[in-house]
Amino acid sequence: MISPIGFVSDHLEVLWDLDNEAKDTAYKLGLGFARAATPGVDRRFVEMVRELVLERTSGSEPRALGTFGAGPDACTESCTVALLGR
Image 1 (cartoon, helix red, strand yellow):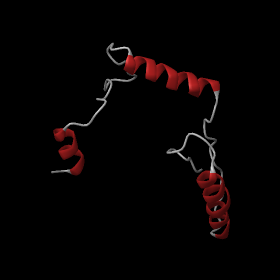
Image 2: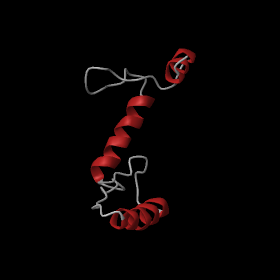
Image 3: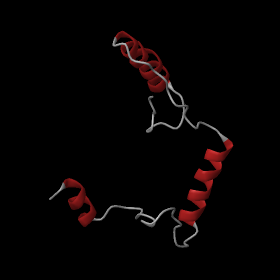
Image 4: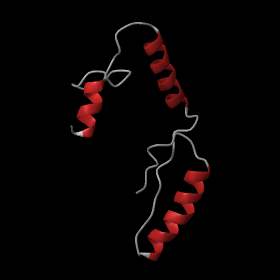
């Protein structure tokens, strides 16, 4: 199972690289191949993006799912240091 997690719509890199080259390579190696669909213009995805934009531009406290809370809009110097392991 392949998921083009960095892409929200089907375009050349998804359609050619994954659906052709990666699929052919998988078959040559005797592996199965399936690709998850990208959200594209699915109404639910577009609404979610709209809600995020409105949330971030409203000045109110960001909402979050889960127990970690909403992350910052920008990474601080300490955040960068933590990510680099320094």
